[in-house]
Length: 269
Ligand SMILES: *Cc1c(COP(=O)(O)O)cnc(C)c1O
Image (cartoon, rainbow, N blue to C red; front, side, top):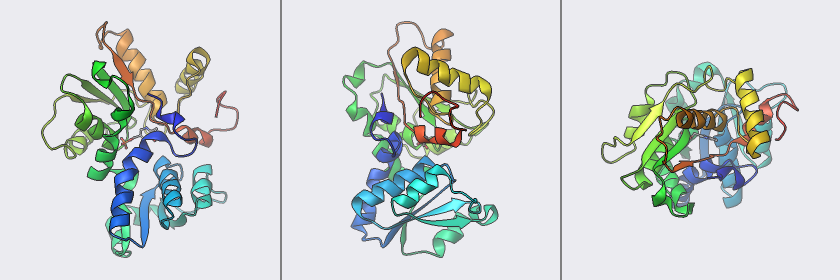
């Protein structure tokens, strides 16, 4: 499923995760929507764009001091009218304090983590024709919000597999479970496909992404979907996913994360 094709700027899954937050903010007549993220955060730019469309003022609290030249992501967020506040790495650790000093804002968690986010992501499968025919759904995992949404939406016979983009983030299991009403043993999070850690993109990953482009004209990103698609192929080749299965891979977007690479690293952008 190609969520990356939804829109060139707002990477797929963030759009779904934001929809109910925005609705709530409008209902509460919030003065401003505010959220957190790093300089390359898809969530930041998606929030900026979604607020721009709805004409809601928004603020992004960005981890770390402002760089000499802003990242492409932050420039885009700014162009959509997001007010940027740079927060030292130390102060960023205490997000509650930042929230408390701006109590009249409608706060969205970093990465859109939370129940409204999962409920938004639960609408993703609505767009897939004959969704019940799939035996497995595979997607990349950051906060686990999308994975929780997929679990909410999936019929009972489906296996939901999340590929963590981080190294050893074992808290994810609990983080996903916390967004589900009932214990769910259909979802599995795999932790062996991080390529060195969050945002790490060794040459093996870059050449894999290049190869997928050449073979399938499939553009993947270095943070999430490149790793998740690699994992999917690996699970199929090793028969961990049995032959005869019907696998739905969710390309969750995020291609603009590739803009952090030196120009020309990938044959697409
Ligand atoms: C944010 C993001 C994810 C992770 O989604 P979570 O709901 O935080 O797990 C996966 N893929 C892409 C492309 C993303 O931008």
